[in-house]
Structure formats: C-alpha cells, structure tokens
Length: 543
Image (tube, rainbow, N blue to C red):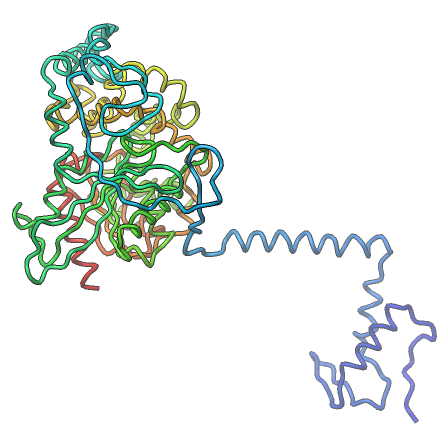
C-alpha cells in the first residue's frame, strides 16, 4: 500500500497541476534539491516546496493576464538592448539607383569605361557656353549661358571692417585682388592642359556617370610590387588636390622618396555631385552609397584588393568602404579622424588629460594639439563650422547665389583654404593663401566647381549625411578592422589621440605626427603625405 501524504482533500487546480508535474519529473531515482531529499516513487510524500510554491503564487485571473504581458514587454526591451550592443563587423553593401526617374528593370547598365577629356575655348570664358553643355567635353544640363568675364567685371563688394583681416570671413579688399588676377592673368586654357596630363574616364554606376582619373606607373623596377590605391577628396576640394602627390606615389624613387619595394597605381574619382561626376537625381545619397559606388568602380577596373586613402569626406567614405567590404580593402590610410567626445570616460579623460596625460593615455603631442581644450575643441570648431549647419539643413538656398556669382563662389571656397590650412591665417589681410598655394592652383579648383555648376550638389552631401547620423555613431559602433594608418597634421580642424582612435579602428598599425600641415594635406604637403602613405603600406605588406 502506498503511504498517503497529509495534504488537504481539496486542492486548487494550480496545486494539482504542480504536484502532478513534480511526480512525473522525479524519474525512478532519488533526487536532491537544496537540503531536502526526495524518495523514489512508491510514496506520495511531496516536498514542502511543491505545495508552498503554488500557494504563494495564487493570483487572480486579471493578474494572470498582466504578468505574462509584462514579462513579454521586459523581454522585448532586453532583446532590443542586447541587439543595440551587438558587435557588427560589417555594413551591408546593398544597392541603389541615383539616376533620373525609376530604375529600368530591363536591360543591363552600361559598364563601359569611356575616355574623357576636358576641353575649352576662348568663347567659353569671354562669350557664352552652348546651352546644356559645359564646354568641357561633357554634356551637362542646367548650366545655361555663362559669361565669366562679364560677371567678374560687374561684381559688387562690401568694404571690410578696419583691421578685420579674415576674422569676419574673406576680406573683400584681398578678394578684389584675387578677382583682378582671375580676370586678367589666370590662364584657364593652360590649366586645362595641366588637368588633362592624367587620363580621365567616365563610367556609369547606379544610374549616374562617375568621373575618375587613373594613373599607372610609367616604369616598374624589377622586384617592386604595384599597389592599387584609391584616393578620395572632400569639400570644398576636388580630384585636383591630388595632382602634386600622384607623381610622388607612381614614381617615388624619381622624386627622392624612400619607397622600398612599393609603387602605386592611383585611382582618384570625383564624388558624385562634385566636378565632372554627375549629381544624384534622387534624395538620400550619402557616404555609404558613395562607398558602394567606389567599390563597384574598383571592381570594374579589375581590382580585387586595394588600399584606400582619404581626408574630410574622403575619410568618411573610405572608412565606410573598409566596413562594407573589408576583404577587398588591404589597408586604410587617413589624414583626418573625427570622433565626437561622447561618454563619461572621454569627458573625464579630456578634463584631466592636460594635467596628467600619461594617466589617460595621451602623449605630449596630443596635449599640444588638444589644449587649451575649450578653445581648440569647442570655440574653434564653432567658428569654423557655420557653413556646415547651412549645408546640412538648407543647402539649396545659399547655393543659389554661389551658382550665379563666380566672385561669391570664390570667396566661399577660398576662405576654407585659408583658415583650414593654418588657424593663424585668420589674422592676415590676405588670409595667408599665397604663402601655401598659388592663385593658379586655387582658382583651378574654383573653376572645376564653376564650369560644372556643382556647388549646390556638393553642398547637399552634408544634408544627406547629417540628417541620418549627425555624429556618425553607426560607423563608430561598427568599427574598422582592416589595417589602418593615421597621419596627424598639426593644423587640422580637430585632433583625435590614438587612445581614442583605437576604439573605432581596431587595427592601427601606423600613427604619425606630421611636422606641419593642415586640412588639405595632399594639396599643401604632398611630399609629407606621400612618404607617410608609403611607410604605412610597407608595414601592412610586411604583416
């Protein structure tokens, strides 16, 4: 006979279910749970916990509905939190269409590589362009009629404040001198010949024509490996920024650089909407779309693996390229790393780093470049980023005047080449421009924007990017795993110490402090940047 347990005759449904479940789970052997020992089946003496548990959790029918709902809600929140913390190593490549109208489902996109030559004539400057054409060997809608000299002659100027130099923007007294040179001495035909000294091409990707120059080394000594290198410009620059660094990389020995066994094959595309690359016709064209298009470009050129380099927007684009297809990017070299100061740890590091840099991982150079902290990281950035707010919100409004006035366009662009090259140039009446650049080089870059009417689409690029991810947090969370080299130029707009950079860039193999130079490194200090790229690539090749 089985021994009866002394339990109430009438049990609740909950108690009965729990007790039955407990009996079934005991199997055929004695189980131990905590301090209580339970005998083998054959007895019906239940553990006290088996009865006390259901009694302690008796609840009404209303609570029986609310508790599961609450559990699901809390569980959902937990899952969302875990997903937000999940380490993502790549970003999805996806696809896109940026041409006019809807993408044609039938037929394949023209993947041909078409040679392109910049062309000009006297009429281009002195009379008019043909409607619908830039006069530079490529059809371009919306350029209308242009008479550059007529517009330059009719410019109006507001007199500058006494002693203002460049503190209020481009000084109009010096601007008149620049315009006089532009009108009377600048030789656009000669500059076009210089532009054409490297091979130019067009190819259609995702519905728009992409412009690029492709320069191969003229001679490869025995034992030297040719490394493909994609170099990407920013705003308000262009592919022309790289004209002085290209020969240093394609033939480093000839120019006195220590290249070891490395020589480069260079590809410099124009960001869509800049210069001779067609502007997107659809909204939403950002750095990720650009990264995807440039990957497609390199694949179309026959490259499976390549190095990428950039500053300004070129930095963001090449970072996205490294996150999108890390298997294709052999190495990433940057001359601008901009990381926002977010999180308590960084704030504390910034607060005490000027006093005890060794405690937070800062070097003496980091301290020199970052402090006084509020001045260099808050006030200076606010002073130099007014344009950014305009372009990230209502770019077309300001762009109307810049598209119509070559003088306004020159002032808007060249002011950046002053204060972004050296902060002290604010206090010079000529903005220090001619101490680092020639007027021919500066005006050639302006002309690329002028003859293509590309200032507005280049400004829209800010709105497309900052409206989605103002702090580029998504890219920072994903991180970069490819070998990375960082060149720190002392007059760059912002400085990111290595200890902060390595939170995003997981594989920094090269980090160097440059002796001089600012934002437009390839344009201003081509030899310093070229040598740093070579050192970085040699390190990667030896890994």
